[in-house]
Image 1 (cartoon, rainbow, N blue to C red):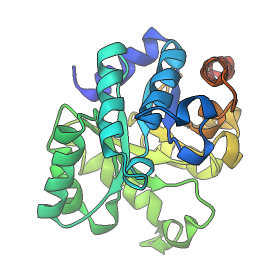
Image 2: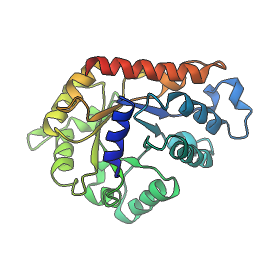
Image 3: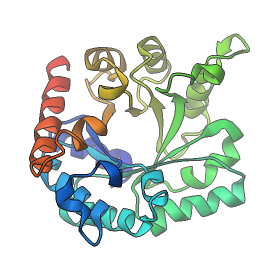
Length: 270
């Protein structure tokens, strides 16, 4: 089963389009896990145990581990998910994009060192920066298209040949970069008109949709404008809204409840 099939299976199994973002900041963790030998892993383990019935996938952001000297805990987290929630794929959020030989090493890092099922990549340098990831036909590759951050339009909305840059990325992903059927797109919830347009251009590509919760994206609009013809075709990422639902000893139970509520909210619009 390749990543796209695995994600579809997981979504159907849990009736979920929720992607749980695992972005643990040591300074924000509950006191009850800070004293652990591996505090980020201890936190993630509890979150995974509490949310596995409501999640379609997990998305650890690599910077939260590299920036806290916790690469080992990232590897431990992905290994734990694969062992204890084997139907749930892992998207490693790295946003890589570099010359071909370097990109090949980044692909080895994500897929072989960490064992991720999919990655996020930056298309700014063109196809040769994406090719080493896309060549791994069993893995998923989420290409940044129209992102959720406030200044994303500085470049992504620039018009070239009569269309904004993000539309060119969407069409390249659809027509030229998807030879192995494993290309997908990152499209933010905070720009619903652009989300609608990308879905029009790419009716079958899977989307990773960040920007709900703390960033203010509207869940109803995401589902209405971003889902495919089958009422699926995307996963909605929530990080802070789930993992920091409580800062007390009940943090895991609170995270599970937050994930369940988001799943049910999304499903109410499908």
